[in-house]
Image (cartoon, rainbow, N blue to C red; front, side):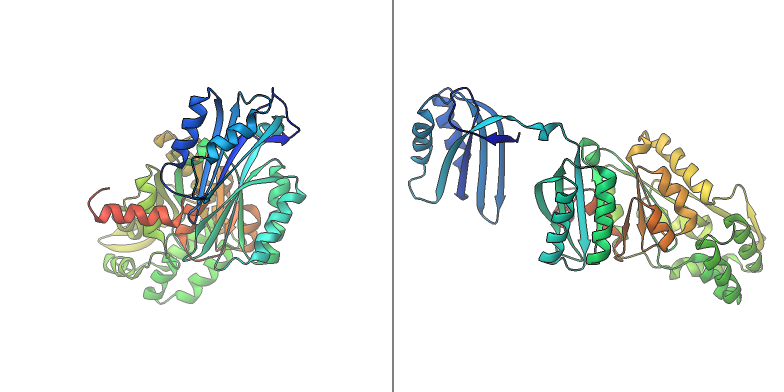
Length: 408
């Protein structure tokens, strides 16, 4: 709905017809019938229904002189039960709201209080943004609200709302609005501690009896203190002697992050491309990727001889740079612009991938990764990423029910 400044009566100005009250069948039909009979031109329409209450706004031209009260009475006469109110007001020419940049602010937390909503709204106002719509996306397993904002500056909004996120102990994401949001995307997930719970190499090390040594190198690598490739080779050397049955045992023991199946299943229904780009190992990850129906995989290959790990690696290393290169390669193969890619990760070796993506999400990440990413999620549910795409919990559940009923 175009925004206009209210003014005194004028025959030349558009008018706004506002219908409010208890919703029911045929309200819009009766309003448009009156407008049609009187030859009044409809320029824009917006309707919202909330908990059985209706707000219908129609921008019209052709209301002359004292005709606005006559038109109001004619429309109101269609609703004699008193459950619907009708108002008509003249409008000045549109201000610059339709020309402003538009942003989407998504708030997520286990619980979102009125004071949190107040804080977010206040920060948006301080950045000269105008809230046009607020929608609740989910009430479980987390609560989530989406604010549609016109005006303001993206960098200022992100900085101000990052401060508010810390103050209110919630997650807040700020994105540019547009049709691209629901267009085809490529979603790239790290494996260890993102798609999967825990670190695969640490689980392998436990079977090899070198858990302490490998864990120390892993921690240093994920914190950015050691070159990833060198750290990887050091750790893999310690795994020499494990056989393929050990790899299979670790694969069977792996747990997906909560919400992982829901995320991938929903993305596939939307026609999105999915990928796993991991510094882990194909021998362990590939079966999981296949089971989930994920489209692309890039990971490291453990060298084996007669079914036993040699302590070496085969082929190019998927490290920090390699992850970003894989994202770009998979986007090109899928025909998805790089601006419509989303990367999700938790460690220092994900930084280049997060930077290369159109939207980089730090998932329960180290502080340095949270600071570098476009947005961060501190909740354990991977499917919360759907809320950043504007997909509500209700939409996910409706799709699940349709599939169960045999209507995918």
